[in-house]
Amino acid sequence: MTRLRVELMGSLRLWRDDAELDGGPRQQRCLLALLLARAGQPIGMTDLVGLIWGNEGPASAVNVVHKYVGALRRLLEPGLPLRAPGSFLARHGTGYRFLAVPGMLDLLEFRRLVAEARSSLAGGRPDQAVDRYAEAARLVRGPAGDGLADNATAATAFAGIDGEFFDAVVAAARLAVRTGRPAELLAPLRLATEMAPLSEPLHAGLVTTLAAAGHRAEALARYRQMRDRLVAELGVEPGPELTAAQRHVLTRDADPAVPASAAAPPRPVRPAQLPPDQPLFAGRETELSRLLELAAGTRDGRRTGPLVIAVDGMAGVGKSTLVTHFAHRVAADFTAGQLHLDLQGHLGEGSLSAGAALRALLHGLGARAPDVPDTFDALVGMYRSLTAGLDILILLDNAYDPPQVRPLLPNSAGSLVLITSRRALTGLAVSAGARLFHARLPELPEARELFRVRLAATGRRFGDQARLDEIIELCGRLPLALAILAARLGARPQLSPATVAADLRDGARRLDAFTERGGADPRGAFAWSYRQLSPGAARLFRLLSAAPGPGITAETWVRLAGQDPERTRAEVEELAEAALICVGPHGVIAWHVLVRAYAAELLALSP
Image (cartoon, rainbow, N blue to C red):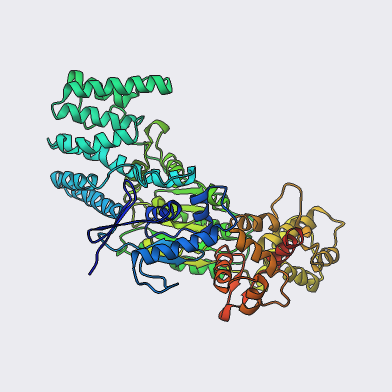
């Protein structure tokens, strides 16, 4: 049996047994390094292209990625048949993910050892924790993916790995000092300070550890060097943590394992952050009943983690309204309160980062700004500590993907996390046992009730139910569209249902029926999803609007695309993942009538 080993925590290097492998051209190695950096997690094609080329990807970028993937598969598994997927680089939607076996990738080994160190410390075995930390630190040879980050986006991906090392080595150094073993962490601390020459926590840890190991002169010299660098490059004096480390060396009267900036515990608060419930909420009883059944799991004494319910669905279907209404129904069951956060997933890569989300949630739990730590690992640790054992309800709206959400899950089996997203968060079901719930379009009776309640609130009433039912169906029963039309009819007494129905029957003007200055409309909601598509998927989305009939067969969409069927299939999957279309049996595509109208508008502008 041959053994593959891959190193990422430093320069990218690969071995098969004892023979080192050539990773190929620079961009091919960059692709592999980025997939390794998110080992086990998928990266979509749009993100891959952006990570490799930034905003200047060539027109052939997708084909180049496919070529590199094929070459890497054969490098990792010689003799692999052409186009065979192999064991390590798995297709996921339009992108890929790297599947590492145990002991293969240094990054995963590092994380395993750090987790074991924390577990040992929690179990009262500090010396064993130092052993595991030291073993993890020895895996690090330098900046992750050293030399392969050609743009800011890629650099950020690798910087996150370096941040994990920095957090671990600072924690390990404090523990090593307390257990009388400081010398064992000096080498990784020196490496970390070389990698982050302006990091005060790292240099404070090195100064303290040097002093504890008997190197007092070097400790003071390191402090002076760091102070001079801060003044020369940033124009600032050292902060309280580094100053406290120097004071300890000079006076030896401070606990070196507790930085001067250590904060008092946040004051206990009971947050009540849920958005206001929709006063005109109507229908949805079947979905609410199902959500109540799922939420009953928070009272299951066998649970060891939070109950997570992830609700997905197309733009405008009413996910946020449904989940907010449900949250208000069950809020009283959660004595520790409710947190709410809009993750802005509709912005794609511009969505709220997990770190920024953690800071917002910590503030909601009562943490003061000066008390919130800087590093991501410390943010996660503080959040889990503050939520441990709490019966708390957390509503996370507009999630982008599972990696954005995972760090935000509380450390409590009695908590409930409600998530909305346009995409089905299947990765969260795998890693956190999330219950996936698809928000569907209401049936005609429920859509009729929604429309009637909205109209009644405006003071308007119509006796022609057949005409109103026609409007409802021309809107595809989309709750957002119905709410907009009801408000528009109420605001314009002269506007008749017959005029509205005529506008909706006209395919070229259908979406104009919902346009109001400064208001939300279906066109804007669909545009958020459209802007996240790869160029190929966006082109196919436009072309599909030209297909005749309500259902579009696989043969039709392949013919419309005019390209390789496999590539077209991947683009169809991307459209389905973005909740712009549905793919039924035998590859037949169905989509909402208003989404199709939006695609037709785009096709007229850009064939």
